Length: 257
Ligand SMILES: [Zn+2]
Image 1: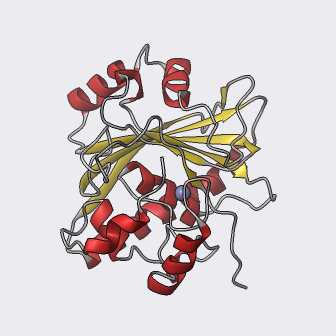
Image 2: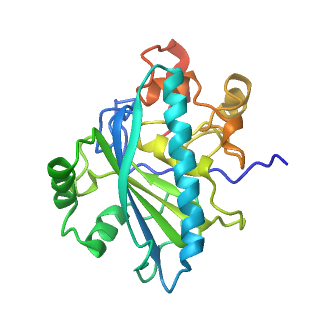
């Protein structure tokens, strides 16, 4: 059965200014090449291993889907990565709850990296540069809690402590739906510059309606339990650097600061 899930919201750190795209910004610059994903499972108490493993399968599905979507645009994509907390959950007290308000804390990547073994985000960046050949990297935080996930992209000019881009996703959303691969891929795409194409505090209903006409199956317009009914349509492809083809009207969908 097809069912719409609660969509996730893009949380900017500061105004995007004159730059309409966040491609080439932060640690997730462009959706191409090798992408290192550091997954960190956080919880306020014990978290069952098998439950985390199921979520890991959703992450793999999201990554495979992105690889296949990139192929359609003749771009080669490869995911590599590591994790903390799969065997021994990373315990973090008072995990914030995303509510799609736009007022969620955006310092979580820094906070969670410190909780594992990096004393700063630049220590983590250095580790990536010295130990991997990744072109892009991001932190995927999975929380053992209910909430609506959000992305933390780095806008040009923000404090360097936000340079490492990441997203937090919750085991279940506030409507109690379990976390699925299309939500993970949706949030990853925000880090590479994609815009929401549904109604949010930054997008009026008129844009959702227009997107429904133009990009009914774009993953930034809607998510689904079945990721294979979704695609990266041409506007999102341009935003994340999969395509150089740009129509003049694309900027009409730019989120309101
Ligand atoms: Zn979103």
